[in-house]
Length: 481
Image 1 (cartoon, rainbow, N blue to C red):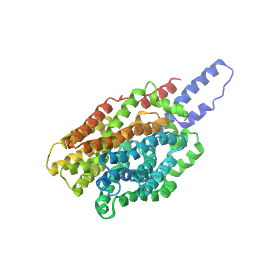
Image 2 (cartoon, rainbow, N blue to C red):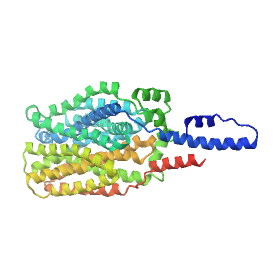
Image 3 (cartoon, helix red, strand yellow):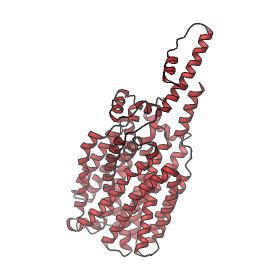
Image 4 (cartoon, one colour):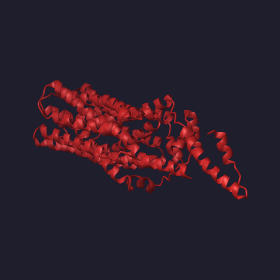
């Protein structure tokens, strides 16, 4: 139907005769169908340059986060031998959980804040906060001070995930959202990999404080983010900043009509009550509970292995260099796996792909409890990386698709926040088991069990997302009038 016909119908005037009134009401019904059809025909085209800029900047933010969170696993062997602090494994596990407690608070607080004040502002503030905290941690005089500044930095670490995830998914074409999200979040594994490599190269000569201090360097990314990173168009439209959204869309070469059409004409109120209701109404409550269980167990495994894998492998008879090399393999496989699983999930569906690889990860982790050759252990560690970190990365990109547009960042942030309980539990479990001297089998079997629970939970999430149901009902309502 031509746009001229739609415009003409919208300009149709009422007259007093019943025939004309009936014709006019019919024209209004027809006009609504025109509007729906016109909005549907506005395919949201994202220029490759815009996608590339957003992807790169968000990747740098997640790379920095990965280094920050991965550095504890790198420096644990040195902390255990620190001649001044004299730390036990349990004390180190508690120190490792300090930043993760901060991420718990930050995920909830910044998740909501980014829906209210914008994704870009939150992302930049979070990167600056955790970068500065790393400089403070490198100069901490006591374990308590170290833990405190790590907790403060954790606030930024918790907020950066949901903001970066939402921006990356929004500024990606529909056919490559999962792939681009995997590319973006491969920065996490590569950041952990960089921390292990930096530790192998410099920790023996310069000590653990120098390795921590390197985490301050991402502060240089902040000016580039302020200059180049676009704000979320979905956020601007949702908050009725249409003039600002129009200027940004024109600068980026994106159709604002397509962004508005994607929202199906729904006027979402961004009051906190409405955002929270979207997560816990009758249709979404079970979904939210399963999402949180999956995230908790997955993150327990990721952070438990990420912090304690080198030390566990040392207890298995490997020296410091070889033990850190296991962390390198784990992180590298996680980064590569995230990209591969992104492609697979784009083709076969994220839910089935993630569930399958959580199961494979559980088997691989259980296999590490059996004494094998070095080559077999490297393969198992690689599969464990695929089946935990890589699957977890794709899972974060899957969460927003389960919720309405106006609550997606909050949904992701709160799921990440609940997962931080698992992140705090994982290092503590590793510390307790290491301190008990009961052998490495118990640690691997506990982590394998957690991965298996993640597999079962995600496969139980209702296949038809509430957000999809909402969009379908809105379309049906408009077409029925």
